[in-house]
Amino acid sequence: MKVVRNHVATYIQTPTRVAQDSLQMYMCLFSLPTEAAQNRITVWAPDYTVNGIKSGPLFLKVIIRESHADTNATTRKIRSKLMALDVHLASLNFDVTKLNSLVKIWVQQLQARGESTQDLFANLLQAYKTSPDADLVDYVKQKINDYHDLTANELMRMVGYKYVTRLGESDFEGGQKDKETLIALQAELYDLKEVVAQAGETTAGGGRSGKARTKRTIADWQKVRGRQGQPVQEKGYRKRRPLLHQTRVLVRSPRQGLQDQGSN
Image 1 (cartoon, rainbow, N blue to C red):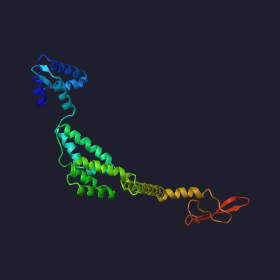
Image 2 (image 1 turned 90 degrees about the vertical axis):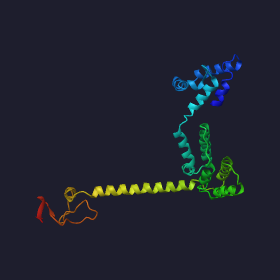
Image 3 (image 1 turned 180 degrees about the vertical axis):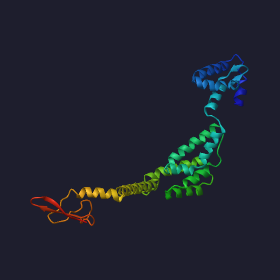
Image 4 (image 1 turned 60 degrees about the vertical axis):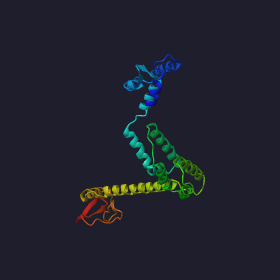
């Protein structure tokens, strides 16, 4: 910003074409943003004003600065992401291509804020070694031994190319094994839930009081008439057997119908 401001001060008050272009650039840029964006930028008017005249290049510089929202919290957040690349690789199902794309975006965001990272190479190396594909891990170790002056960008390019090549090979072990394990665990959990649910239904059905079950059983067997001379049998148990308590023998008479011959 200071370098641009010093250059603008050399022509801003001169009757030259470059001074005219600077003013037209300011007027064009000021008409583009929304009203809310204009209000956010105009508070920084002293930053793009030189000797009372608005400067187009300085105004553009302020727009770029404010659009990136230069805050220390944002910078710390980006750095924390770059320090946990192994965690991000696992969350991406060990997709090296996606991880490399995210790393490039985060590095660009740091550079836009005038920041940089010094431990990117070590973080990438740690992340690549967590891959479940042993061949890919061996390739990374080999490149480290072969190229002692390897940069982070070169490492991402080489490992990314190797990952794409490995995808087409039959013995590739990416995140598929973990995915299959997860699916198997989910299936076992689903079966376990069904067993618990069935056990709960059985307990609910057989957990009634003895009084309630007796009423229901008596109501069932009272509707069943036994043969002549035979005791009445229950209708609600798996094994049908004569009642041991309160047994009533019903004898069929040709004239009087059913008669009670005894109790208890």
